[in-house]
Amino acid sequence: MHIINRKIKTIAAVAAVAALSLAASCSDVSSKKLVKKGLYNCSERLRAAAGRMEKKNYADAVRILEDIKFQCGGSPVMDSVYYYAALSQLRQKQYDEARAEFEALYGEFPRSPFVDEAHFRVAHIRYLRSLPSFRDQTETKEAMRLFNDYVDLYPNGAYADSARALYAQSLNKLAEKELNNALFYRKQKEHNAALIYYRAVLSEYPESKFAAEAVVGMAEMLVVLQRDSEAAEEVGELDAAAFDDGLRARIEAVRRKVVINNGS
Image (cartoon, rainbow, N blue to C red; front, top):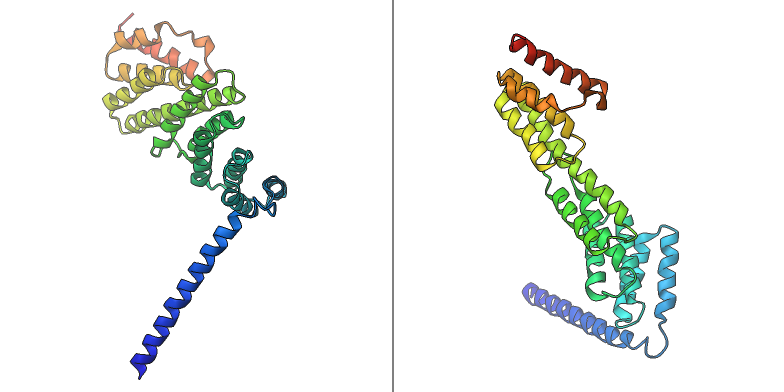
């Protein structure tokens, strides 16, 4: 008897689920007809979502925007729907969701006035997701690639200056990682290893703000390794007056050591 009762309950539960699914399906079909019947105004709902965004109620805005996507396929407002959805997700720091919305925007609506910004935002999201310089820099490198792509596509775009500035910051982060590796090996008195990383800064990121630090550090390692002629060559053309007090003092110290070591 207990087994029979359990079977009856199971059958009833399955039937209930089926009934709910059927009801939902019917509701979906009928709701898609609301726009045609004039019972759903896509533009008005979009304005409602914008109002939620103004009040910083981004989760509610996303809910409305998702409903508009369902109701208003093919509507002229759809690029705006994706744009507002992306911004709402971005404001909530839902970076993966925001990136997907921006990518859908420029993929599906290539003539939208929001396409310029969407390309920049995707790159910026990668930048926001990047880790500090001592961690893995995969996101930083991808951000740089996308910033570069943006500038190629929109050299005079509204976000071109920002893209260039963030590209430079990303470049500095990668250079800083190499410089920190050099400093680590320098503290370990692994001078040849430190020299490799100083050179990496100069060869891979010569435009970074750490380039001068790398030149001086490399010269210092060459002096320690008794490669004075190479050290002298590295600092020989540097104008010490162009650097801050710390670097200027280090440049002069290298020059003095080279002179002393050469006995002149």
